[in-house]
Image (cartoon, rainbow, N blue to C red):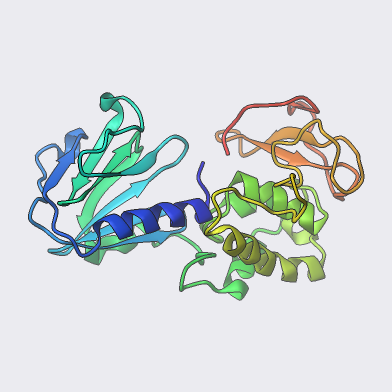
Length: 279
């Protein structure tokens, strides 16, 4: 799943292609909006909010989309061959005189009044890359449920918006605790560091084509996706296990030597072999 930095890059590409321009084509390929036509309206801006995308259109309308696991927005020049998937996977087409934005496999497509934007994103906590970022509020949100495992709390967009499975694993490694440690057991000095470090990581990667957290040449990430290779710090094999509430399990990576705290509960898949899963 794209994380806050990636979604911001998508928003920038869409904004550069569409903002300030009149739509010459509007095609919604979802039943609810099959008859909607935005042709002739000007796109005002494309704004990211956490992992959500808000495309504001003249006339007080907002196109709300979310990429989740497999969705993508592609931008093509006039006459350029589209390449993002088969035609039956297209959900939205927005075109101007010189650019066409095509949304593939979008699981969330919602057209609402701009005055009602908060209905789509009002539940989100402070956005790590947004103008509403508030480190103290983000930390207070996390601490509101002290018994909750830190990894789960970080993925809850109501606490702070923009962290996905990659940053969850990397943040826990950098803080030296396992993702299964209860939020309330996180040492005070590390808790204070958490929102600052999270913002630093996302800001450092907001303009990069390849996400990096290590500063080590040839090694982009400390633990995510690295099982069973050796930890970059201590050489212990990186491990992986599922973490979640049962309805939404995520592969979670950690170093059992560098990170203090509980391991996965018995019965959860764990080990050193490579795994596939949602990010």
